[in-house]
Image (tube, rainbow, N blue to C red; front, side, top):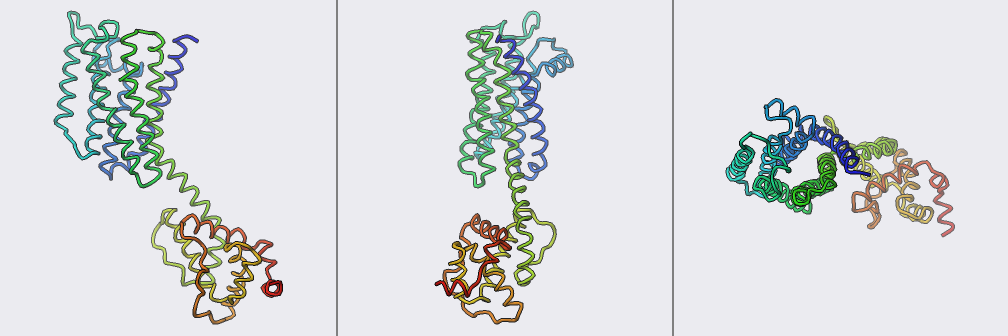
Length: 370
């Protein structure tokens, strides 16, 4: 393998990652309009995406020709990199409630002006790594501007990731931390390493390093949406599994069914279904004798399976007009205190409502055995 192959593979990954990053930004943009913090975050990521995009060879060539800066001039890319770093730093300070727009953007303007001045010469040639030594002020300013933008962003995303209250938000912030850290490593270590060593192997890894940043940022931008989509799919699947049981219990105990106005999100609909199932079970439990409840536990072993056994008897008793018990013995509501236990209890009822275990339950026989 030679440096050209490494560079070619990295470039392919970079192009694909850049396209994916823009797609994820477009998907997340509508939700960001209603939230200033999200809007600032997406603007910061979009600025980084723009910086990556204009560094791609075809885009760089178009920009240079459009601005008449020559085929090999990278000053537009470099100046935009400073601007994007300022946008990222502004997002970081705003998230920390320490926003200083005049200082941030004023400094970015001064650095950009300095880069433009340093880029000029007798022949107005563009600055390239071959023209200037690694310690030249041009490259020091450029690397420092990027590190000061992406480094604090990584720290802030990590800090807010630890404080996040939801798993999708926490995961997304941690991935964004990795993306900003990757960009910081590139400008703080990889680029200076090339400027010092002029190694062709280090130069060949440039596209791969930037591609890693693009892919990670795309994943971090899309991850909360992907996790919500995954949860929504699971909620719909659970709703379909609970639908027959829910309809059966709501028909038996209509008063537990709350009116539905408008469209409900899948998680709220699932919450209502599980609560209505649980409430119907609590109502129907008063239509069977304590001895029957004990017999069901002895027959089934678990509370959920025992409930599946005595539930048809309770429905039949209610349908016959049997008067419910006025007091409920304590300790019989074992569906669980956690939401996962509630859902698991309801799913067990739904899956075993017509099982062989339920059909074989005979309260008299169990009592005789006891």
